[in-house]
Length: 69
Image 1 (cartoon, rainbow, N blue to C red):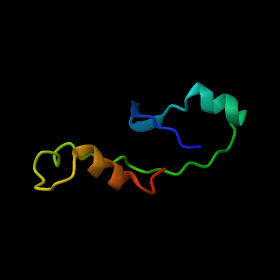
Image 2: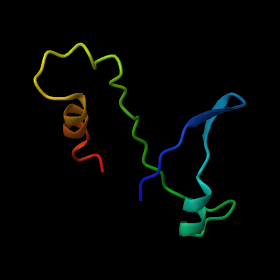
Image 3: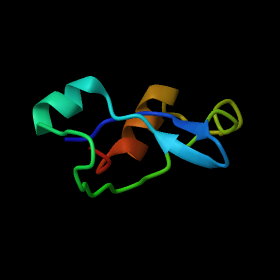
Image 4: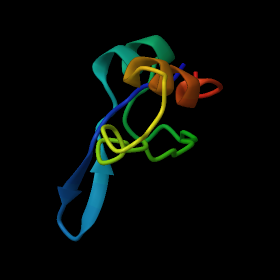
């Protein structure tokens, strides 16, 4: 199951907060060893409006997101 969250500053490091729903579903508790895959979410906000194409912005986003889910 994929979940989105933000990186937060924690001292000199960055931290990820695992949503409570995920903790319950996976029966996680403190000091459990877990494995995390990290994918940076793409930011296309500066691209929209500059493309000369005949498809809508939503169609373009849908095409880019194929395979991400």
